[in-house]
Structures are given as structure tokens and as C-alpha cells.
Length: 111
Image 1 (cartoon, rainbow, N blue to C red):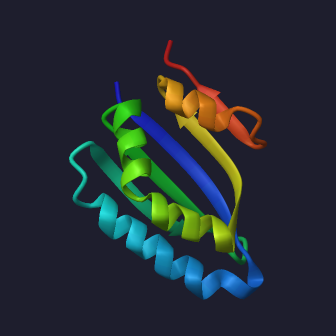
Image 2 (cartoon, rainbow, N blue to C red):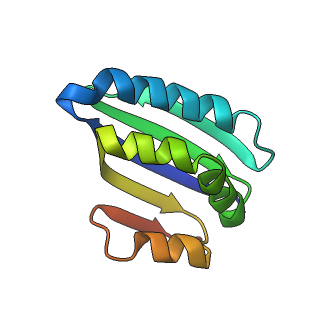
């Protein structure tokens, strides 16, 4: 079963241009990853808020993605705040540790 991840970010007022640059770079990097099925950014109805749909073949592929784009993710978190993240599917140890203590996280496990 694949892992679906839905995230919402709020770009900081002084960092929105940089946020958009990094979001596009992340999408470009994800396009060539073999375990990444979908990686698509959206502009929400709330000013400065953006959503992303990520889908991976499994949690290990999500971990591989995060390791592959680590420097870009650090740039993203320097100019934006994670508002919420929802996981749909099984998590591996890496993701369970990543969500530990974070606000705005929902985990939805398969039946």
C-alpha cells in the first residue's frame, strides 16, 4: 500500500518568493525519484498558504525522498511554517520519530 502525505505550509511574509523557489525545486527533484508517485503543490484560498500532496510507494520511499532533498527541506523550513500534515498509510520508524512531539500531525492507518 502506498503512503499518501498531505501538508499545509504558511510562507513567512518576508520569505514567500524564496518559498516558491524552493517548492518548485523540491517538485523538480521529486520528479526523478523512483519511489515517488506524486508530488504536487497547490495554492490555497488563504493568502500565503500552500498545500502539497505527496504519494510514495511506501514509507521507506518517503524517507529516501526526505534524505535526497534534505538541504532543500532545510531551506523551506527557514521561510515557512508547517501548519499541518496528515499521513495515510503505514509509517516506518523514521516517520514515527519525525512526528514525535510535533503539533498538527494526523496519522490515518489502513483498516
